[in-house]
Amino acid sequence: MALNCSRLGRLIFGVHTSTEACSKRAVQQSCGGYRVGRWYCSVTHEEKRLEQGCVSDSTVTPATSAQVQELVLPGGRRQVLKDVLPLSAFLTDTFGRRHNYLRISLTEKCNLRCQYCMPEEGVKLTPRSQLLTAEEVLTVARLFVREGVTKIRLTGGEPFIRPDVLHIITELRKLEGLKTIAVTTNGMNLARLLPGLKKAGVDLLNISLDSLVPTKFEFIVRRKGFHKVMESIEKAIEMGYNPVKVNCVVMRGLNEDELLDFVALTERKPLDVRFIEYMPFDGNRWNFKKMVSYQEMLDCIKQKWPNLEPVPGEETDTAKAFRVPGFQGQLGFITSMSDHFCGSCNRLRITADGNLKVCLFGNSEVSLRDCLRSGASEEELLDIIGAAVRRKKKQHAGMFNISQMKNRPMILIGG
Image 1 (tube, rainbow, N blue to C red):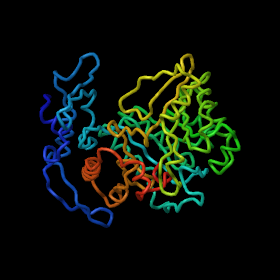
Image 2: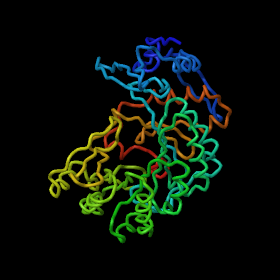
Image 3: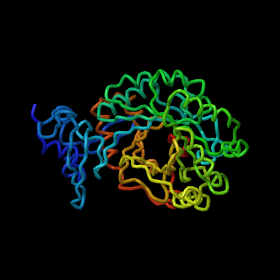
Image 4: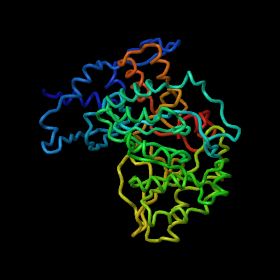
């Protein structure tokens, strides 16, 4: 079947102006007991589906079936994108960013009380009846994967608190087109679950660890459990996870003096230690003085290892990666505050109560749960998702503005 390339280009890449991709037809849709206004795309979902499945001879390399398309960004700047055809226009925003990575929070509950994640007194949890059921999680996941999502990360809270987590992972593994299933965990319950997780099909593990000193660990997370986390890291390595990613939120006055100790872990172990700039969320008492910037961390590490070398990565990587020559593992910096990476963002988030967030730091949300439970069709859900994606801003606000904005605590977003 021949591909109408000019039309597909309009569908997938022309959305940087709404007049090119959508007819501005305002429609009122009843959803979850309230009415929302949204823009409908002028081309039907079925037409998108038909064109998405068609490939012209001029865009396919016979040996690899890789597709290449040129994206014209605002201002006339051009960028060559590969493997673009499988991604639906619903997941492409007005700045040409293609969202093929979905983070799904499975629960708001956690068995730790990390200072950067939630208030010391905890948070008011959403009633269980208002959280996504396993079947609703899988319904949403299937929809996104059919539209081109290739990576799903399960988060929380602490995802392994949820009793049906293995069932969810097993069913996700069956989704055609889903290449990667990742999980972010605090590691407290991970060691005993690892055999089942490996069998179910978990590809990547991120384990939070903010201190290598047991007493300091307990102070930061307000609970005991340091040795459980270390056991989980070791067992994950034993079971062949390579690399095992270790997430460390760096906070001045708490753990910035351990940077070198964390880097030293990568010498003989296949670890990817990622230092995360302290970010403001409701209830975590963020202030600028507590934040240690990427550049400050990098300068500190280079004093010990001046031959630290950058590691090439993908355009959509969140971490700036480095390696000490001769070390087995590597390190990276997630620089959301001092050097944002909004221009290459490919991530969307679903909260445990079923809200779609197109930006971690944005306070705009759309309830997919309410729409699912009100009987919305697949096409209606896709229109709602597409409208939310098209509303995504070019970049998040500056750190000071973020600290003043009303948003959820991190625990209720999905770490």
